[in-house]
Image (cartoon, rainbow, N blue to C red):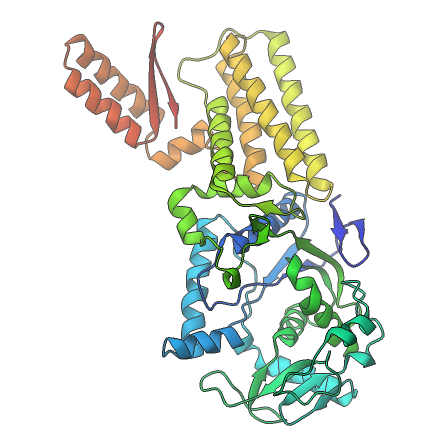
Amino acid sequence: MLRLYNTLSRKVEDVKKRKGKPLFVYVCGITPYDNCHLGHARTFIAFDIMRRWMLHSGYNVKYIQNVTDIDDKIIKRAKERKMQPLELSSKYDKKAREEMKALNILEADEMPKISQSIEQTLALIQKLVDKKIAYITATGVYYDISKFPGYGKLSGQDLQKIKVGARIEVDEQKRNPEDFALWKLEESPGATYESPWGRGRPGWHIECSAMSMHSTGGEPLDLHCGARDLIFPHHENEIAQSEGAGYKPFSRMWAHTGFLTVNKEKMAKSLGNFVTIAEALKKWDANVLRLFFSLAHYRSPIDFSENAIEGAKNALENVRRSLSVMEGEGAAPDEMEEGDLNGATTAAIKSFSEHMDNDLNTPLALAELIEISKRIARVRAMGKCSRACLEKNAKKVAEAFAILGIEVMPAEAAGKASGIDEAEISRLIGEREEARKKKDFAKSDAIRDELAKAGVILEDGKDGVKWRYA
């Protein structure tokens, strides 16, 4: 059974399956006012791996990820570019979805947008007003956190300290400095809606409560996920407004990713130290980026550097070489040697699974896969196992990598991807050998180049030509 660290309880807990019902998993999505960066990729890849492992482990998962397509930043950027707010957010939302697909991130089962969720948002705010937990001012509707005794239970924040450190902004008429907006009264073109309290738009926090509960039919979430910087105030406020309205518990478990840092500072647009996903994908394969992130635990910070990503790239290439069984490789079956390799692979996959179940410990899980890949390569070099045995074990390891969304391109998959099968490869190698005998080296080189473009590497040796997928 999968066990995850629950931010709420500060303990590692079982993630229990639900009979006849899906596990409701909600992930805080993007605010599409600009290009997504690798900090976003880190969080969404981590939770994609979590989801993939759940599915592999037999969980029925309903995966929900919102889109904050109305926001202060979106309105400001739209004004700068002389665009409508929803036009701007739609553009960057579309681009983000394309980039997530390129990163091999599974599409969410539902991706609600706040612009399409106004009705349920107004209904939730009205509940809070009716319960006198929310109040109305000239600038909007605010949540009175003094009415919620459990405030701070997720983040560990002390309400008294929050009060001391808070301040009232000049355009807000709040009872208490720490209260937060549920509905902002304003007339921004293209981003405001009618409400019982006047024309305006939702506050940031209320949207996730409204959209998630709409997607679950009012049932509690089983797991709420997001980046660490959302714990306070965003997730804390979600709990207050949802449970204040009577939805208890709002979420049974909470999971948060560590930051992606640059020189120990969080990668963020506001700091100008970010690398966009688009820029990264021009330099590195998506599998390299996924491996780079997975080599650290999802709750730990990762310091970004090109050298670190290049290290992940080299590691991936080494695994691919280790698992690439070349044409003609292998030896007459040696029952003892093959039994040892089969047993070692089975043990490695078992350990891999145990590490994944233990709070998604991808660093240790990957260490098992990388080590067994090296062993397969060593056995292959010694020539003590048949090709069938080598391929069988390599396939098992490749399948484990695939659970993490990392394609290490076993021969079968590479052949399909390249569009060239073994029969065609053999034919071209034969033609090349004939050309070499006739000293037609131009044709020989042309065939080698043709195969290389198709992802097939030739290696000439004293025992003849061997080939493998790149």
